[in-house]
Amino acid sequence: MMNIINRPFFLPFIAFSLILAVWEILARYSGWSIHVFPGPMQVFISLWELIANGTLLRHTVASLFRVTVGFYLAILLGIPLGILLGRLKLVRVFLNPVIQFLRPISPLAWIPLSMLWFGIGDKPAVFLIFLASFFPLVVSTTVAVQSINPVYFHVAANFNFTRYEVVTKIVIPGMLPSVITALRITITIAWLVVVAAEMIAVKSGLGYLILDSRNALTMDYVMDGMIVIGVIGLLLDHAMMRLSRIESVFWGTRSR
Image (cartoon, rainbow, N blue to C red; front, side):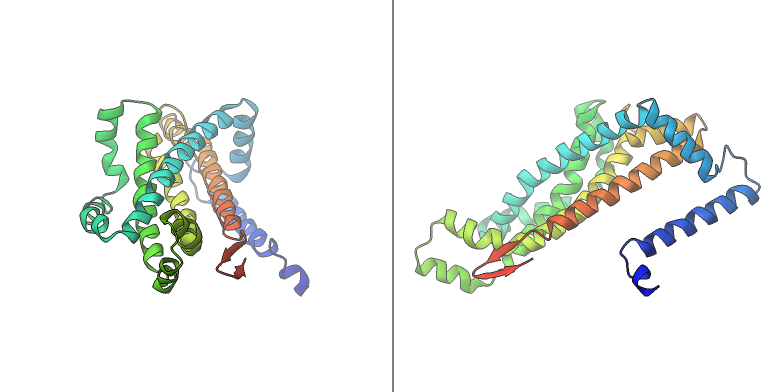
């Protein structure tokens, strides 16, 4: 019995089973209409309909495309900037106040401006995802670089390392664990933002599916969208967790 309980998927299976049971009981005996609070069976039937007619795939691909573009733009710009801020005091003094001023502003507060600048379509959603991912990555990378033991940089100077060698042999290995953790957190934020942005600025995506279904009072489709969002978020987090297990070499010591 203990061997079954200790299996990694057993307890989560029990938890989700309990949620489904409570959901079914509430749907049957709460007194709410099925149009307001559909039960699990109705939701799963409508989910299959969305899969069969291709609607779910179309909206899911649209959301993943926007997250991928915005997230990778944030990586390409945010991590190098974080390295510069962590290594160069002049750059840090010059840019850090601006970053700390913009960082607390919610990405959703940029929706009116993004729609004015980019119009309706993918661009405003990608811009919001970029903002949501960019600032956490910059700050996390900066802190990670500053946390590297200064002794390594002194040794590199004694051996006349070039700047390229310092970055590739000291900075990147030293900051990698913290940056991967930041990526895991940031991808979740990006996924949250794309759903909110799609409710306003675009005509496709899971956020749009939820909003359009709400307007049509098809709450089973609303719940379908929520389920898919949760599943994809879980898969993205699992992928980032697997990424954090990649073997890295730190100055003669190996870690997994």
